[in-house]
Amino acid sequence: MCFICYIGILCFVDESREGVTTLQEVKDVSGWLQFMTTAPITWMTACAHYIAVGDSNDGVHYSVVGGFGLNWQYADCKAVQLAISPNGDLVWRIHQGVAYALRNPALTGNHQKKGDVL
Image 1 (cartoon, rainbow, N blue to C red):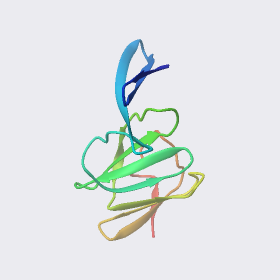
Image 2: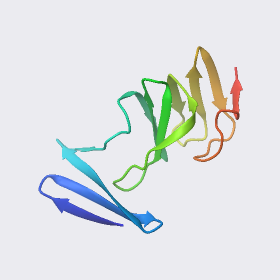
Image 3: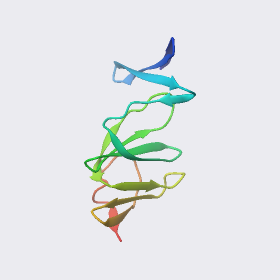
């Protein structure tokens, strides 16, 4: 992993993906690092380990937080809102008027079937 700095633009080069090099542009905007998202987002939540955003189709996208890049993944659940505890051990989502608590928060696996309906 290396960082390349151009005038006003910080670029993150990630060579960790099976030999494929990806370049993600990260901009510094008035002291804020600006990251691109996968789609226009309607909500955002984060904890110490990852960030999750929701799109207008109730899709959930998430990425591990760390370094200067975000690798967005599409979750296998839908939500109009998501809440995550600061350490990531507790995750709640709301979809179609029903609240769900994730039994085993993890970045992999089928999240749709692990939630308890309350």
